[in-house]
Image (cartoon, rainbow, N blue to C red; front, side):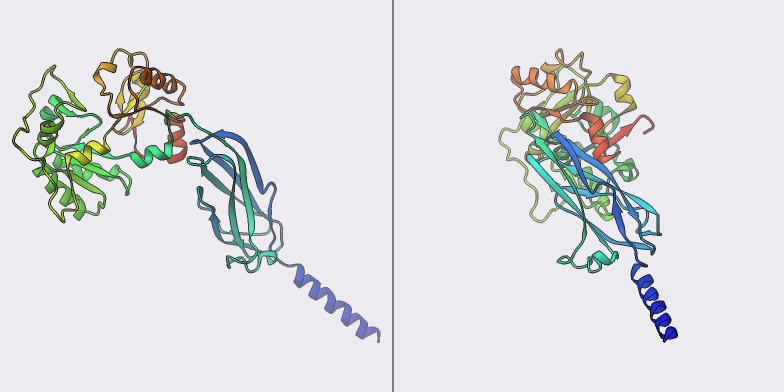
Length: 360
């Protein structure tokens, strides 16, 4: 009888050991309250995920609700006692009032054993807080990224120096394929030359090389000046001769030419990006295509800027751009905008995307 009882006890202990030998997910603060923030700024937080069980914890999948992104985990398998960090970034552009964003962890913890199925239990992290309304003259970092295009002048240096579109980067056609390798894969690229022929050929070459969002400007800078004269032109001379369009029709892209954009479409896309920091800061790093007009000089140089074009100004942390934009709007520049958070916030959200450094 005693032997039977002893065997039963041993069996129960074995079952208990089996039951308790399992992974267990733990996060010290699964809900992060960020307080209040101005719409357009990103909220970032790092959650530390720990396995407090006695078997390896597997993180099968990480999913986030709309407007929330997560970085890749260094490992998706945690030994007992091990931990891993999960960084979360929330873009608040377009949101207002109280928000709550969820991050779902699908794991092999027995409490979430069926977490691979969307309708079953899953471990949930949350980021909550209040988003305050931005000013009408603010442009968020995400909106600027959406607007961003890389305008490239393919002509020789002399032609570029004489007159080029504001914000255009000078890259001769022969050097372009090497130069564009520094751009993001999804970069929106617009090319122009003098009359459109070199631009068309170069766009075809880039498309063949795998660049999917590249366009040439039909008629080039000649067609631009024919219809818009010196609008958005940065010139070396005080006066420049512009061709007349009298008796001519505006050029239209051939049907089926998916690489073509006309000057009317380019005018619709056009904006001016201005860096208000001092020349040394600009030389160290700036956004691709930005014009350097220091804060102390902007008032004197307003006469060189058109009033009917979107103008986005930035500094390091949007300390000066708000005041400059309000001054410009009072002077009739109704489309002047301040980049919310400046270059610092751009880098925080997008890293080195479209950022030119002194070494380049």
